[in-house]
Image (cartoon, rainbow over all chains, first blue to last red; front, top):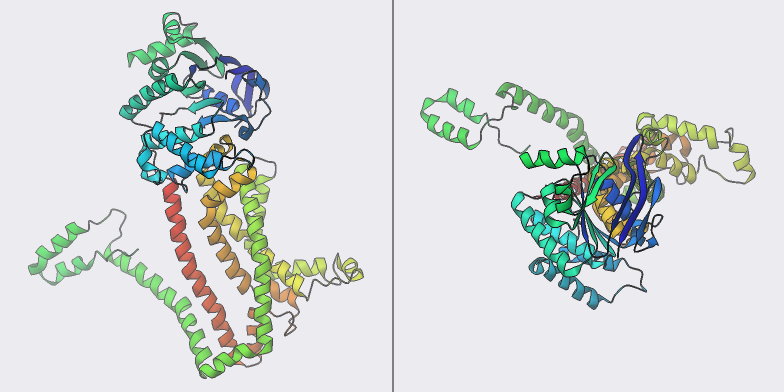
Length: 243
Length: 311
C-alpha cells in the first residue's frame, strides 16, 4: 500500500499549517517527516489519517482517493505521541478495540479476536501484561500497546506521530531500533513524524523535511546530508550536529 | 484537611521545657509548611468555620428531626399516610423523574457541543447555561406564567387545545427543568475540557463511528462526573420551592410538591407533620451528600488516572 499526497493545504484561521505539500511513500517504505516544531508535520500526518480535512489537495492510499473519507473508514493505523490509550480498558481490551467495534458482518469471532490480540502482545513483548491497565505500565510499554492496538485493525498504512517523543533517551533508542526491525519484518507502509533528526536519519528509508508548512526536501538520509537543497535544510541539520 | 493541628507543640513549649525533646521530635515528624498560618490565625479560622457551620447548618438539621419526632414516632409516621402528603411525594418523584433525565440528556449534549466543536454563539450558549443560577427562581416561575398562563402569550392557543400547563403538572415539570438546567452541563464541561479528545481520535482511527466512540470511550471517561451532576440536579429538582410555587397554584393533592406541602402544613399549624415531611427532604439531602462525596472521590481518582504523566 502506498500513500500519495497531492498539493495538500490546510489553514487554521489565518495560520497556514500545511501549504501545497506533495509526497509519495512507496509500498513497504518507512518514511520520516522531519521539521522543527510548528513546521506542519503533525498536521500533515493528521490530514493523511483523516483526523483533519484539507482545504485543498488530495490523499490517496494505493491509488484510491480517501480525501473525503472519515478517519474510521480509512483503516490507517495511528500511533499518538502521548499514546491515547483507553484508560478504562485493560491492555487486552485496548488492543481488541478496533476488532470489537467492527460491524457484526466483518467482526471476527471472540476466539479469533483473543488469538489475534495474544499474537500482537507477543509481537510487542507484553504477553504478561494483558490484564494490566495503561496506568500500570511504563511509557515504553504504553507506546508498544498503542502500536499493537493500531496494528490490530490490519491497517493499510501506519502513521506515527512523534511515537517516541515522550520517552526518555534510553527507551527511545531501544524502541527506535525495534521499530526498524519490526518494519523490516512486516514491510507495512509507514510514515512517522519526528523533530529529532538523528531518529529520522537512523530509522527512515527516506526523509521529508518541512518548514513553515512547506516541504523543503525529500530524499534518502545520505543524499540529504550530502546535498542539502537549501539554506534552511543546511542550517537545520548543521545546527543540530553541533549540539 | 484531616491533618493534625501542628500547633500542639507550641503550647507544649510554653508549658515546660522538660518535654522539649518530645516536641522537637514531633516537629520534625510533621514540618510546618510555608503557606501555613500562625496558630492564632489558624485557630480563629477553624473556630469560625466550624462555629458557623454548626450554628447555621448542623443545628437546624438536628432541629428538623427533633421537631418532627417530638410528639412521638407514631405521629411522625402517621404523616406519611396522609393522602395529601403521599400525593405531594408522588408529584415530587414524578417531577424529578422527568426533569433529571431531560437535563442529563441536555447537559451531555451541551457539554459535548461546547467542548468538542467550534461554532458561532458558543460563548452565548455557555453563558445561557448559567442563566438559571443568576435568575431568582420566582422570576423564572413568573416567566412561565407570562408565557403559558391564561393571560399569557401562548395562553389562548393552549386553552383552545385544552392544554393546561400553569397550575398543573406540566408547569411544575417545566419550572423544575429550568432551575436544574445548569448542574449536569456545568459539571461536565471542565472535565471534558481537561480530558481532551486524544482517546476519541484514537477510537476513530481504529474504525469506531460516532455513537460507538461516545458509548465506548467518552461515556466511561465522564461517568463519575456525570453522576455527580445528576445527583446535584436531582437534589435540586426535589427541593425546589420558588419557581414551582409560582406555577403550581397550591392545589393540595394535585399540584403540591413536597416543599410546597411542607409550607402548607406549617401554615396550618400542623408543625409535627410539617417537620416530619421536612425531615424526609433533609434525609434526601444527607443521602445526596453521602453519595456525592463518594462520587467525588471516584471522579478524582479517575481524573488522576487520566492525568498520569507519560513516564
